[in-house]
Image (tube, rainbow, N blue to C red; front, side, top):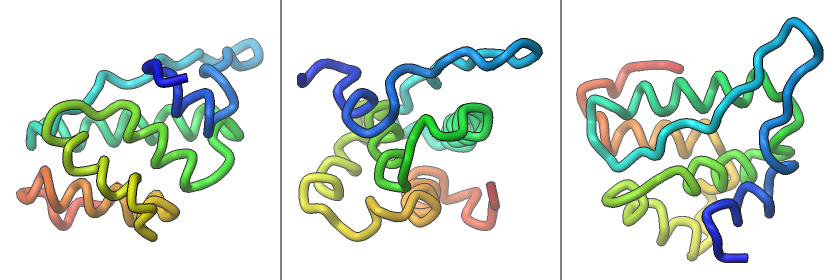
Length: 113
């Protein structure tokens, strides 16, 4: 239960499923380690994944859990206490991603997803 797909299985409805004909199936984004110039791309990949798989994550907390499951290194070190301490921000996907951008990509503070 502690494997790499724990959060995906716990909070999202399984792996990303292929869509009906005419749509592409989506792969999970590459894990994000906190490198500033990769933050925007990582969040864009997640946004595309969620938009093309409606219903795959049933709540903001599920989306945040899925996002955290794709963090490594300093980004994971930043997010872990937020999740462990059940901070209110884990229930607000937009707020969480804004804070992630503010923390790891300060040059893009005004960027809106």
